[in-house]
Amino acid sequence: MSQYQIAVIVGSLRQDSFNNKLALAMAKLAPPDFVFRKLEIGDLPLYNQDDEANQAEQVKRLKSEIKSAQGLLFITPEYNRSIPGVLKNAIDHASRPYGQHAWIGKPAGVLGVSVGALGTSMAQQHLRNILAYLDVPTMGQPEAFVQVKEGLFAEDGSIGAGSRQFMQSWMDRYVLWVRKHAG
Ligand SMILES: Cc1cc2nc3c(=O)[nH]c(=O)nc-3n(C[C@H](O)[C@H](O)[C@H](O)COP(=O)(O)O)c2cc1C
Image: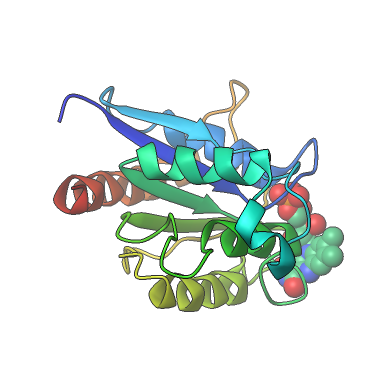
């Protein structure tokens, strides 16, 4: 495959989101044949099963972008020890109608950054549960539970020197994971 398109799903809509910054910084650690594209999930309607037969244009767009990607990268904050509602809403939309879900089989990585010391560990575990049900092969190791600290990001937005080696090793494993599983 000449290029791997990676659909990035960020679980925060906040303008100055640390998770969004992490998404941008992680992309810089990938090889040139990996192209990262963030999916818009903030304009999706609230999921309502009544609308399934006639999915909104934003939902059709989301599903088509997922289907055309070779890999998924979820980067999410933890809200009240789980994933944010906006992320669950997007996952539910693209999982329906029954038998026509878009996530199936796409190799995924899970990351998150939090101001708290547990670094999104609970949210990531909940997300892994959902992805397992959806038949999404999700990289198990290394796990990365990132806490916001001075120097996490360098001036240019890349990962700061103190975390660089670990986050590079995470990305190297993720790249192998996608290459191995991408159809
Ligand atoms: C509704 C809400 C619930 C939160 N719950 C948690 C939590 O359970 N664990 C945690 O570590 N941080 C929690 N936080 C703090 C987030 O880690 C922090 O706001 C973080 O910056 C959000 O990610 P973002 O910068 O990408 O928007 C919560 C924040 C909000 C707004």
